[in-house]
Amino acid sequence: MPLTPAKFPELINAIAADINEHAEAVTELDQAIGDGDHVFNLQRGIEALQKHSEEIAGLDWTAAWQKIGMTVMTAVGGASGSLYATLFISLNKNSKGKPATLETFAEAFLSAVDAVKQRGKADVGEKTLLDVLVPVANALHQGVTAGKSSSELLEDICRVAEAGVESTRDMLATKGRASFLGERSKGHIDAGAKTAQLMISAIATVISQTR
Ligand code: ADP
Ligand code: MG
Image (cartoon, rainbow, N blue to C red; front, side, top):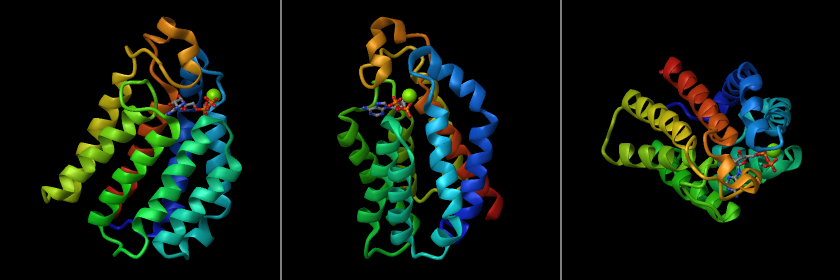
């Protein structure tokens, strides 16, 4: 699977387009149970990454994760900024000195999602972006271990990401701003889970088109 930093400019542009396309809908979700700034926060991060995308494309993959993480940390406010920064910085730590393979990535991603859990003191079932990231990390790791093909992996990942988004609808929010609403948080999809799914599906589309 061509997941080299050289692909980064194309990936970040695809993510930007997907987030922009769904910006209004996601903002409505975030206004229902959050403070409505989630898309804006992400767009700031994405724009910063686009500015650095040629530089990132020229790095080796562990250095690229670090640069992505630091850029996100500096550019993005809100809970999601520090959580995504943690994800990428942890990907750097977990892939250092290892071959740039899908197996390494699947393991590194699983550990990076664990780092996000620790950072947010949250887990699956709390109506957050973890309801997408955790099942995706598990599906990728299990699929790679089972020797699934790239197209099977991409299909699995997109499917569990969508199911993860939908699963947040009836959950009670126990972390982040939505938790202030208590029972009233139920009946709304979590904005952070939705954007995680949108970004993953944008990445999957680019990868499937370049195989
Ligand atoms: P803020 O909540 O600080 O305004 P954002 O609006 O950018 O930040 O992001 C909100 C999203 O962050 C939520 O929709 C949720 O998915 C995610 N989130 C919030 N708190 C946590 C947490 N402790 N752990 C994991 N994800 C969280
Ligand atoms: Mg917010």
